[in-house]
Image 1 (tube, rainbow, N blue to C red):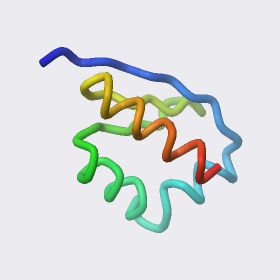
Image 2 (image 1 turned 120 degrees about the vertical axis):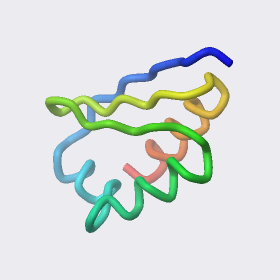
Image 3 (image 1 turned 90 degrees about the vertical axis):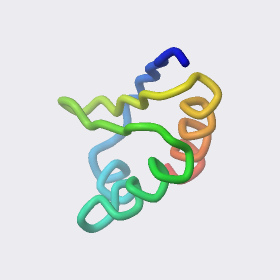
Image 4 (image 1 turned 180 degrees about the horizontal axis):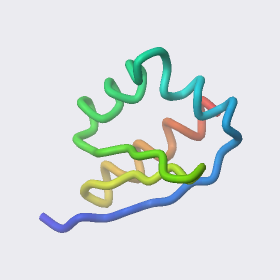
Length: 64
């Protein structure tokens, strides 16, 4: 199992909406897809297996 990382740059308002109150929305995405989503200096990083990270990316972009 190799770790894969994707990076997305999103508007801060969009990121707040995607993360949700107390990060509840992003926690659901992480749990369902087995990935870790981090916000570092305005860049969203998705870590996990490549297929799952790509699914998370598509889901997040569809919410943006």
